[in-house]
Image (cartoon, rainbow, N blue to C red):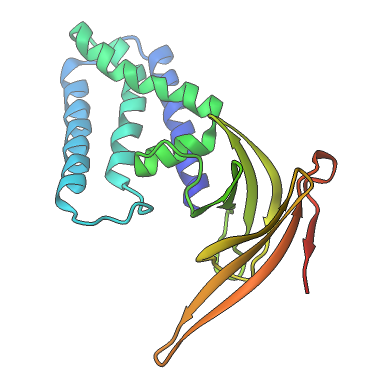
Length: 223
């Protein structure tokens, strides 16, 4: 849910900035200064959250950082209608540079907005070797019972999705490659850890995924 909400708010901020730049002829300096101060306070709050929080969860979203960037995107359009110093215009104009990233990879943008990390997955990623990765698949409504994964292959900054909707019957803690048959298929075993008050149980699920482009979305289940 956070993925689509973040993406929607970013698009609204971009559209809002464009509308403000086109429709408004002139904005009073005082009004803009108050908005800029709010933007600055969000930035200070984001910095303090990075500095003061010890051992933060790397996958936890940073909402102050998100609000700081979104407000900068919105003001990047408004600043050109304000009688202010040119360096200020340049500063807010830099936030508009996030738009090319949105065109290149919306998932990278969302991850950058929420975590300040330039990666293309918000969830867990498992390296299978040979540039193959298993990643959590984004969904509008996600729960442990509906969690799905996808197999991707990365080459530099480019990536291709080999298979989607891979079901491991729950959240995965680790993955081991059983066999990689050239460019034909890959067999993996996913492990899930269940902690109870009295014991720790480990379950596993095997999957064989074809790697051929013509059948890249076919998933076989080993019983």
